Length: 259
Image (cartoon, rainbow, N blue to C red; front, side, top):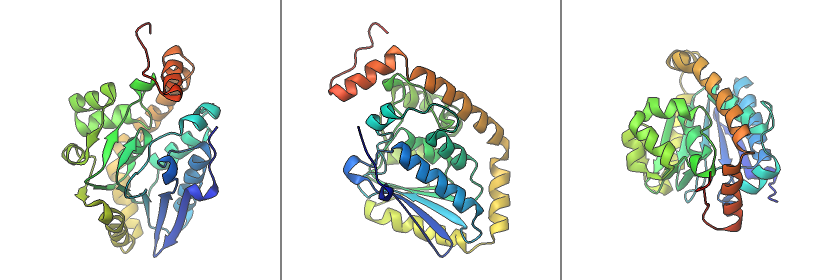
């Protein structure tokens, strides 16, 4: 069983920017249900706080997030639309203010898919993105089955989602997932500078511009998150996922030959 503490997600507001930091580096910033709750609560607070004009999501210069904490995930599987992970995804996908991400090192699963909802994504040259849902006997989440083909083009999205293999920062930049690449030690500072620039602009203009850009996809994204969530929950109990997670916990290669 994995445990997390309140300090696993750090939150602070300075000069109009709320910064949310994955702070569980010893566990590669893998995300627990409690951390999803903290993230969802923080985004809701930021949404309703007029003093917050932009949000930065960041990790450590060696790792952004290894995705779900597998032990915690198996102990606390998302059981309903009100599960912490789905609260976070809804809050993230509908967040009306600018979202900036700073990504270094591995960004696995939701560590990559959450970036599809960010407006600016700054990456270290050590960033490695992957969406290995199929390899876990699961399906995409965070509306990535819609947003990844739209952003990357179908062939590249198919390679990323069906094979689940990592791709590096230069490829992510070419795909349009990443805004700019800098050395890892400079990523968080760059994200902060850009967020401060946003915070100095008229909030009404930021809100309306983002709303207009997102408007065409908003309904599709919400619908796809719900549909993926239903499939994800069903597949989590099926033989392929049980084999994949069992192999992960037992540190062996999964055998899907009969599945």
